[in-house]
Image (tube, rainbow, N blue to C red; front, side, top):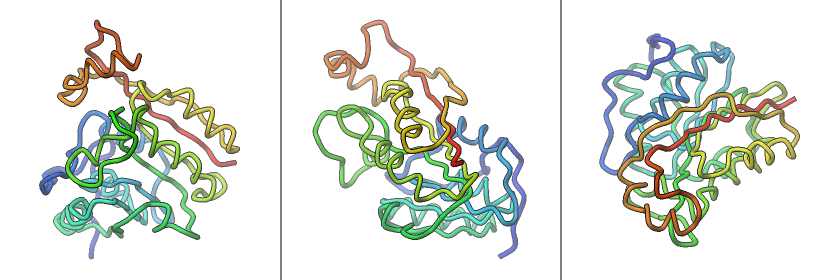
Length: 228
């Protein structure tokens, strides 16, 4: 399969998305902007956790990186594979839990837009579109797993790029990664209007102290961490 270069700082055009698959939005574009400033090319091994349509994985592959993309959703895996074929870009797409599918492997860069929306209930959804965004009462059920697993995934000098909502506690993410031995900070932020999911949960979010009555915008945070 021959590769085709993509414009830096943008997402691949004309992406398809099967039903229930998360479509690229402001958080995806914030990651794409940061990804454009990372040193990628032939010889760079990239992992995307929760690939969805494959937009970010294809962005990296378009710059010559060797990319592995993982998603728990079979529909997302099928979507990413179709988009890779449509864009004539090589992409290794795996179905399943990221930790199980990457055992023993190390990467130069890990990029992820994990589920991070706070949701009532103690567990994660097992089906439906909510699987792409619901992440437990504090929105950290997947974020914390990634932070714990990251030192085993990154090579020396490897980088993590992760986006999530400010509701989830950006400083908590930085602290977890720092305790794991990485150098981490908030590399970028963006303010976006509340979407339909947050609007539908306003009363619950206010009751949990995660939002105020006056809130109508969400802060997205881009965490960058470096493995020494």
